[in-house]
Length: 203
Ligand code: FES
Image 1 (cartoon, protein in one colour):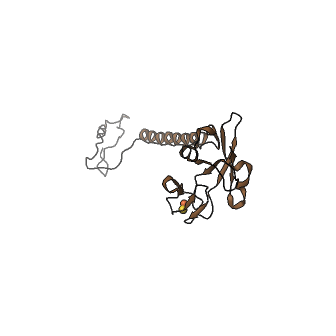
Image 2 (cartoon, rainbow, N blue to C red; image 1 turned 30 degrees about the horizontal axis):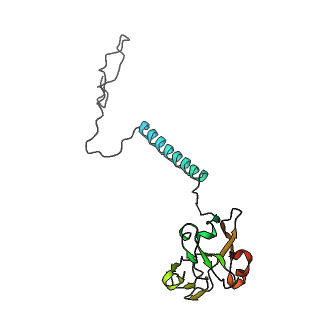
Image 3 (cartoon, helix red, strand yellow; image 1 turned 180 degrees about the vertical axis):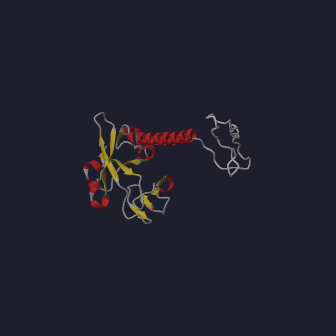
């Protein structure tokens, strides 16, 4: 029987039997408006995204830990090294160790401070701001390309802004008769250290 709003309701018949009521119409299938661009992610999709982000963050943390456990190794040249036998050298500047060890080995017939013949090892670092000078054989000097400082073959500065001579490294004879250079010990002329017995190898 329709009520005041027109809907049909179940009503008991006079004999106690329920009157037949028409079944409600089947729910209409939900269709998405083709113009609707709003996101439509299911719960499963959200879970997948969350797991993906968690996995990426975990992998990044693991990689960072790995880098911490295995830091970059700085391969610095050794401070002590043998450079061969004295008879392998002529007089003057030998350049073969500059690239590898950062020194020039110089053989002189008469050192300015030791007053003897032998070897000294000049460290190839400019005493101005640390550039690497070049050996100019035609001009018998070392010349720094950065600001023009010049050094004599002894290592003493004579032009440009360098405030002091090049430094010399310890040089001694090894047990096997080779020349041993030790850059962990340096000698500065302005401190009177070029007279030290290990600042010069008498040969
Ligand atoms: S660094 Fe050598 S002259 Fe300045």
